[in-house]
Image (cartoon, rainbow, N blue to C red):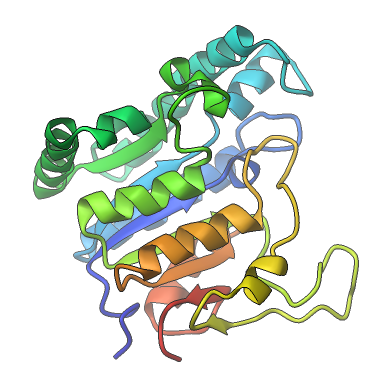
Length: 265
């Protein structure tokens, strides 16, 4: 059996473009499907941590904005509004499947201090021992939305850090593309998906391209660097399409989906 099929503790990261429509409003059908699958995996004996983007995107949707404002304070305010709705929806949908969630908002400076880091690790451990699903995001109202001071930079990096903090066996990044390609599939219909990457080289990084969607902050390069970070600790990372969260069942059953970094075929 592979490390993926044997994974007991997993971190699942979901991006803004997966959670929302182009309008910025939540894709409720997809969010509900994600909650149902994660609750079911928890029922099956897996320990699950959800790292969720979307606060800024949801806040923009509620305010009727198409583009992120330039003003940092406005962006922080939108993230605060969006985080509130995001957690309300998660609490509602997970609750329908008899699962309790906890909000965990982190800042990079907390993790740089050993005592604070230990407190975070203890909190994660206690929550998971209680059967609670932690829902993690960066504390955008404190971290100045990735613009100033110590910050994670994006939630792909945050998900890798959370995998370290929780001692996870697997990191799964759900995104709007079904893996790493040898060329840009949006421009070249002949592009081929790369199913396995044993070692992340400069050539692999060069395939990552540029930034992500208008509503998100990361692109493929941030996902590859997150994979590289957890691979250094012997943890595989899978980048898969988040359009149908049931893909997690296929992944854990051993079917090849997306791109797997740092695990044997």
